[in-house]
Length: 132
Image 1 (spheres, one colour):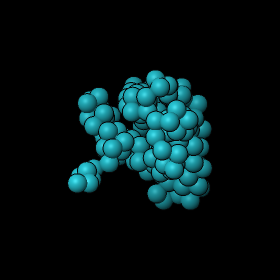
Image 2 (spheres, rainbow, N blue to C red):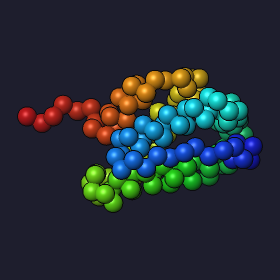
Image 3 (cartoon, rainbow, N blue to C red):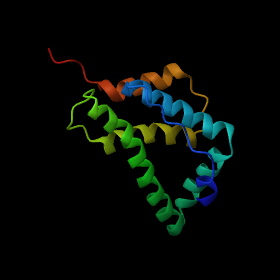
């Protein structure tokens, strides 16, 4: 984990539009994982955490910090009045992380911006049919 944490941090956009910020964050994260050793290091850490309690605890602690960091993107949108105050930023951060981790673990870090945008749009708008 220390090796991973020493890597350059991922830039988090602040465009003033939540959807653009989340797409930009995921694009930057995928590029970071793809273009540096960070992706393979983090993938190995996740694998090790499946059978090693110490690694699992370290990953859980690290993930909480990253969850909080990603949730700040959501909190900025709340402060702008872009999304309702009752939205649970941590849950939204988990949804974004789930998308990212799945792509990391399946080595699909070359996802195009349109697909990333579609995934973020589904998180932003939900998938249920509008009430009639």
